[in-house]
Amino acid sequence: MIQSTPGPSASEQHHVRHHSNVTSFRQARLSKTPQSGKAQRKEHYGNPGESKMPKEPAPDFMFIPMSAEPGARARIQPEFRAPAKAHVMYDYQRKTAEHRSAKWKMSTPTTYAIAPKVPLPGLLVPEQSVQPSLVLRERRTTRKKDRRRPKRKARTSMTELPSSDDSGQSPLGALSFTLLDGAVHSRFIHYGPRPAIPRQPGGSNLMDVFSALPIQVKPWDETLITRWLNYDRIPWCPVNGQSQWVPFVTNSPMLLHTNLYSWGMHWHGKLTGTDQEVFLYQNPRILEHKIAAIQLINAHLVSSTAVTDEALAAVSMFINVSLQFLNRDEAARHMAGLEALVKLRGGLETLSRMGTVGVLLQRMISWNDLFFVELFGGNLRFSLLPRWEEAWKSVYAPIVDDPVTHLEPLQARFSGDLALEMTTLLREIQIVCDDVQARPLATLTTAEKTLRHDNLFRFERRLCLATRITTVQEHVYMNLQSGGSGNDDPMWRTVAYAALMYVHHHMRGHALHWSQFPALVVQLRNELSFVQAASWEAVPALQLWVLAVGSWVSQCEQWVVASLADACRAQGYASWDEFDGILKQCVHLGTEDERKFRIVWEQVSRLL
Image 1 (spheres, helix red, strand yellow):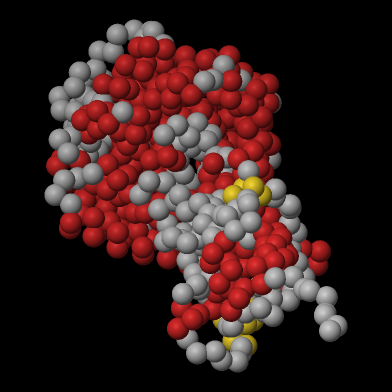
Image 2 (cartoon, rainbow, N blue to C red):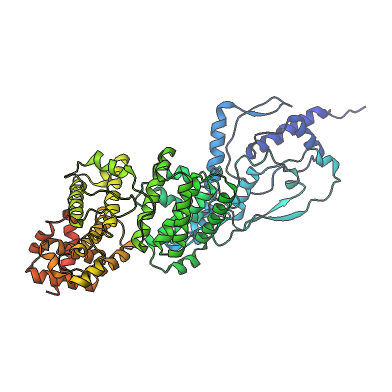
C-alpha cells in the first residue's frame, strides 16, 4: 500500500501560522495591552485566510525585539521600550506637522503668519500617508463578539473625522478614510478611556500633545501663545509677565480664554493698522474667546462663595483691553465690578499674601486704575501701596525729604505749593534717568526690572495726582477774577502732563499708539490755554521742554510745533546747539533724547 508523505500535525500547522502572522503584526502595532497567545490563536482559527492589516503602503516602522515563548504573551524588552515610545512620538509629530503645514496655514491671519499664507507643494500630505498613523493610534480588536455575530460579507464604509472650520479647529481637516468592517474596523476596541497617544480632533497636536492645557487650543491660538512666551510683559501694562503669570493662566479655562482674547487684541493693536471692527470681523476667534471668557466669569461668580484670584485676574485683563480700545462704558462697568471684588477680598494690600501672583495682581490693578483716570478723569479708586515708596528707598536715596503730606490716600497731594511738588518730582526723575543710562533695562535681572518699574509707577501716580492739585482756589474762577496773576498752578499742571508723557514713553518705552497718549495730548493742550505767558519767565527752559515733549508724543501736531517755534523765537534760540543745550537743563536721557528732539527741531526750524 502506497502511503502519502505525512504532513505536519494540526498543532504544528498552528505553530507555523501563528509565528508567520505575529511577525508582521508586531511591526505595525505597539499596544499597552497586546493580545494573549490564546486570543490570537482563536482569531487565526476563525479567519485563516484573512489579512490582519489593511492593504495599503506600509508606514515607516522600526523592528522591536520581542521576548516571548510560543503561546506566551509577547513583551517588549525593557531596554527597547524608550526607543519604541520615542519612535511613535516622532512619527506622530512629524506627520501632524506636515499635515498642519498644508491644511492650517490658510487659517492664520496675515498679520500673525510668519510665512506667506500659501500652501507649500512639498508639504502636501496625501490621504494614504496619514491613514496608517490612524491605524497605529486607534487599533482595536473584537475578541468575543466575533463568535456571536453571524458571518457576513465585508463591506466598505466611509468614516469622516470632524471637519475643520475656517479657524482650523481639526488637525486632520476633512480627511475621510475607508475601512473594511470585517477585516479591520470590527477588530478595533479601546484600551482604556483614551488612546495611548491622545488624538485631539479639535485642538493642537504640537503645542499641547498630551492635553495639558484646560482648553483645546487652535493653531491661531498657538501663534498668540508663542508670541506671548517671547514677550516680556503683560499687554498694555508695564508688569513683567514671564515670572509666574503664564503658569497661573494655563491652570484655568476662564483665565486662558481671557488672556487669549487680550493677547489677540494686543497683537492687533501692535502689528496692524486696520479698524478694530474690520479686524474682529476677519478674525472671529478673538470674539469667541471673549464670549467664552464672559460666560465662564459669570458662571464662576454665581457659583463661587468667595472671590478667587482667577476672577480678579480675568476682570483686570478685560479692563486692560477696554481701556486700550477706548470702550468707556465697558471699562467703567468692569472697574466698578473690580472695585467691589477687591473690597470683598479685604483690600488691595491683602493680595500680596498670595505670593508672586498676588503681587502681579496688585501691580496690574493699580496700573488699570491709573490708566482709567488718565483717559476718562475722576479719582483713583485704589490707595497707594507702601510697595512703591519702599522700591524708591531700596534703590534711590531721596534728594530732599518730601514736604507734601497726605490728607486722604485717594485725594490729590496738597500742601499749598504745587511748584515744590513738581520740582521735587523732576529732580527725582532725573536721578532715575541717570540710572537708566548707566544700567539699561536689558542688562537688569528680573528683580531689578521689577524695582525699576515700581519706581516709574510711583512717578506716574504722583504726576497723575499733580495734574489735579489746586493750591488755593479753583483755578478757573481765580483766572477769571485776577487774570491769572500770581497763580502758577496751570503752568505746573502743564509740566506735570508733559512729565507724565515723558515717563510713559521716553523712560518706559510705551508705544505712541497706546490710547493714553492722544488723551494726554488733548489735556496738555487744554491746560496750556490757561497758562499766562508771564508764568514761564521764571523757568524758560521748562517751557521749551514741555513743548518739545508734547511735539514728539503728539507726533509733531501742527499746533504744538507752532507753539514751540514761537517760544524759541521769543527766547532767541535759532540753532540746534542752543536748543539742545537748553533742553539738557531739564529732565534728559542723553543720546536717545537727542535723536528724538533733533527730529522735532527739524520741524521747528522750518517755521523760524
